[in-house]
Every structure is written in C-alpha cells, then in structure tokens.
Length: 387
Image (cartoon, rainbow, N blue to C red; front, side, top):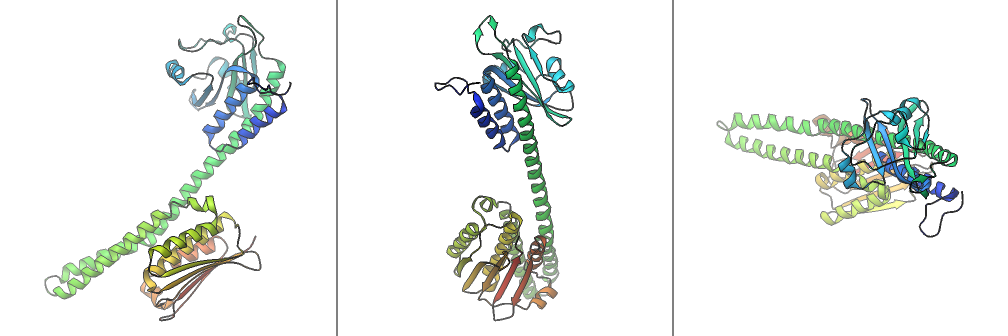
C-alpha cells in the first residue's frame, strides 16, 4: 500500500490505518463506535458500501449501521435484515467471506427492491474470543471497469481482519463503559432513595403527627393548635429543602468537567452572592484526587454549607481544602453561628445530615469530625487518605 492520496482519493498506508484505529478507540458510546468502524472500513478498503450488524438473540439484528446509502434510500429498503444467507454464515461459522459476485452464491436469497445492486463482497466477523459481536461487510470495490470489477484482494481481507480485531476491542470497551454508567446510575438511585428515606421520610412522619395534634387541639385549645400548625409549616419547608437538595445532587457534571477545587470555588462564590453571610473558599496545595474522594468531599461540603447557611445564623462561613502531609486532603467548613450541642441534637433525632456525611467519609476510607457547642459556632472536618 502507498501513502494517502493528496487530492481526495481513498486513504491508504499505515497512517490511514492508525487514524482509523485511533478514531475507534476514542469513542465511548456503542452507536458511535459502530458508526466509526463502518466509515473507517469503507474508506480504507475503498468500497462503495459498508455495513455492520450486531445480532440479537432472536434471529435478527439489535443494531445495523450502514455507510454509502442515503437515509432516504435506507428508509425505502425497509426492515432490518434477518440472520440468513451470507450474514448467517459469518455470524455462526465465524470465518471471513470473500466473493467475486455475491449474487451468484447459492446462499444468496435476494434483497428488497430499493436495495442497491452489489456484486463483489468481503465480509468479516467481529469476535471477542468465542463470542461473535457482529458482522462487518463491504461491497463493490471501487476501481476497474463497471462491468468487470477487480474485486477485493488478499491484502483487503488482511486489512479488514486487522480492523475487525480492533473493532472488537473498541466495542467491548464501549459495552463496558455503558454498563458501568448503568451501574453508576443504579447506585446513585439507591443512594438517593436511602437519603430520602433517612431525611425526608422522617420529616413527613413528624409532619403527620404534628398535623394530627393540631386537629385534636383546634376545638379545646385554639392557641396551642395555632402553634402546632406553625410547626407543620416549618416541617413542610424543611422537607421541601431536603427534596430540593436531593434533586440538585443528581447533577454533579461540573465535578467531572472542572475537578473538585474549581467546582467548590464556584459553588462557594454562588452561595456568597445569594446569602447575607460572607462565604469564602481557600485551597492549600490540593490538586486532583480519586474521583470517589472528590465526589464525597463535594457532597459533604454541600451538606455542611447548607446546614451553616440555614441553621447557624452566623455572619461568616469559611471553607478550606488543604493537602495533608501523607498526600490526602482535609476539608474544613467553619461557621461563626450559634452552634449546637451534638448530644442534644442526636437525642432529638435531628441529625442535620451528620449521619449521611459520616457515611460518605467512611465510604472513601476517610473520617468526619464535628466540633460545636452553643454560642461558639460549628466546625465540620473531613479527611481522606492519600493514594
């Protein structure tokens, strides 16, 4: 093979192969990987048509991607093909197929009226070990006279085999990525359900009891009933805040894009503008941390800031993120508010999110400490170990 042509001809040579393999490896979504494989194969082998089918378990195809056919023509062709003929041979026998004219093969069963005419054919299974992930095939090698195509060569078959091997790797990685994303979503839903049960359900239970007390008092002690109804309103507001915070936690995209330090800095800046208390952020030598640690630190910071701004009544909240000598990090959220007695809070069943914060810290091998007393503010500290 020679180098790629300078004026729009088909790509060729090692550089073109390398470009195609790199393009496949950069895709994460399965559909994008399939599309990249098909386009790369058609361009590298200079074919008129290319397709890749991913089989399902019912004799059809779960996905079928084509290149060289317009969307309108594809719509006119109709339903996806079944696993029969040459396609079935590649899927079930696991070997390549190279034909001078696919229409002359005894396994050929025809195609729909709108299907383009195809003659020379090269097919290759995409396999991961013993598992067939799909069937990749090309038709109508360009070049030669219209009535007598040169057809696909041994070199073409070798190149398509190489492409199929790397396609298997790219597809496997894409499937693993999508599976990990599904598991992450499932874990996040489970975590959210746990937190809603611990926080919101307790608020709603208290709300119900308080409303029942108000109803019992409304005739014989209207003043006390009024007090109970005010408590109902306060509990309802707290439940709404808990729900709002839970929904906000479903969108941590900034953490992936910007990292913990930038995300915390932005979050603190927004809170400082939105509240009368002065909220500051200081970072001392902390750079990138493992993803699980960064998320846990961010969640604890959000919870501690929420508590400080809603309950402490202080005029200043300081957030500090510092590197530890062992290479870990310590997060400190300090407020100058009224403070509280942790023992009283625990006995009253008002945890202020402390249970959730401790769970997050221990979940990444860290620890959470709380220092507070009435009239002296509150300091929440979370430390995570170094790698």
